[in-house]
View 1 (cartoon, rainbow, N blue to C red):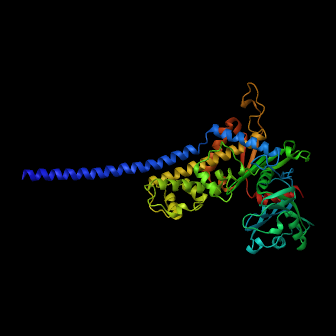
View 2 (tube, helix red, strand yellow):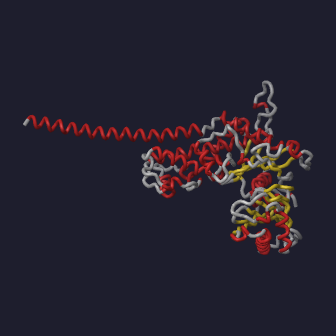
View 3 (cartoon, helix red, strand yellow):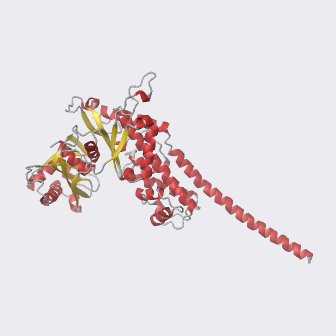
Length: 498
């Protein structure tokens, strides 16, 4: 009997040891898999490093590229395009002015009423109209006749008598396609994008085409300014605050423009303006420098994009791409370990399925159980029941990618300020310190949902500005949010050049 009890005890002990060994083995295996995920996150953090030292290198590189782009055509990744805008609105403009914005499958007509005095709120009306698909591949005459007819209908609805005494209406035209500006009110179309393919338009002056359509439709409207939406943002900023010297658009895409001394534009020597300055459209999305913190995910995204080796800066900082960088990191983590989400969802391999607004919602989810993160992962990637630990890792990935983007955008802004001597570093010699320099108040107009709607992005950008410039200098720099540079801004420039 004793032997049986001993044998049974030994058997139970052996079984218990076996179970314990399995449990321990699973735990070890689980830890190894989570460690792989942690290593991917660590590599991402190191690859996205934006220390102050590195950001200052980006600042210097931006300023150098700006100089090169102003010196000669093709001398830099930055195109530094002349806009011929040297007269920005200042609040004294009076009367009704119009704007047309053609930038995609829709166009907008805007009317702005100016009182002759600066006003924080500008009275305006806007009407949006879809472009019929067949007109996107028809003829220039068909497209612009349709736009002119829509403008005529918009004007006909004016019931307040605001324009009855005006013989000729002045209009600003925002044309968001690649073009070569020839003057403040003329520009040659280089190529169509965004689904348009009207062959007879390429190489022609877009304003002349629009003006001819107005004549055909019996409209007495004069196109006073042909503008880029970023230049429109600068116009709105300058109207509200005359200390505005630059404008940034950072939304789905990104761009910047600024006021430059005319004698600094070496590639156009002999060009004269009454103000001695001109707005330069940088096309800064194409900026590139070896100092930019590029990861394997950025390289993959660029290689698979329709424009590889182009718009490198834009692909690291704009809303079009941030969500997809996050998706690529999550996919890599899933491949490294099934502990994160279980079996890999095919949706994780779909480019741009994670839009940046959804990424921002996950990043800013402050619920204890990260309910919004779980919902978005389920709805977007069809990954149900994601453990809380995995949700926290996703939030961290969003944070790393967003922080890098915001801090690089801040470095780009300081690069512009450095170029025009507004970063507090100009003229320092010998023992003078930065605090010895008398700083001018400097305002940068900024437009776009990534900045205005994404709180953490905005906070990271401001934090980086303070770190790069130092608090003594940064307190003289103000970022002012503006709205509708492509509409209101174009109308304001029409007022300036009417």
